[in-house]
Image 1 (cartoon, rainbow, N blue to C red):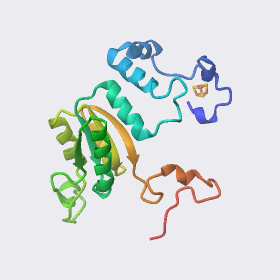
Image 2 (tube, rainbow, N blue to C red):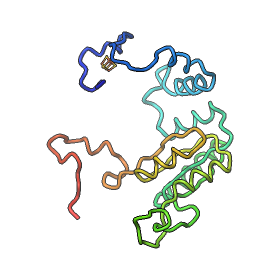
Image 3 (cartoon, protein in one colour):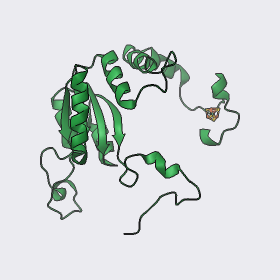
Image 4 (tube, rainbow, N blue to C red):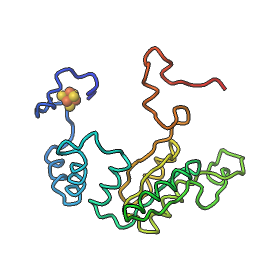
Length: 195
Ligand code: SF4
């Protein structure tokens, strides 16, 4: 399946195109699960009734968390964004919610302890430790903020709760990855700087 090169777009008219390879009955059944319904309905409340396009992502996360009645919410942040992470925590407090903020450097482990091919003995990101800290504290939701590419995969692999992303890291484009597509294809699509 390659939806990006599909012209008929029959799915938009509620028709299957026949390219699906999953068990449709199992998918329908999965949506009937109460925990899936809670998420679907909380997500719909953010956009239904003309609300779509009027609410920022941060506001959406707050309203979603309130709808879901999450008790323990974690903020997994890059230490380079600590000032912004503090601001996120303050905004949540204004809305009556407390965040557990855990930096990517939690535990103070060295790069050569984490990466078997490294001989650098300076502090490393520790996404597995970050995840296990949230697991140990019983987080219901973890919000990702600027976690490095790859570390975000390990973190999400290990977390035992719901996860959403507030900020994705893009070191070239001020954490706005879509900016690489402005001017594509004339511009260098990968924008690799000479070093
Ligand atoms: S009709 Fe099928 S291939 Fe086309 S966009 Fe929809 S799902 Fe994708």
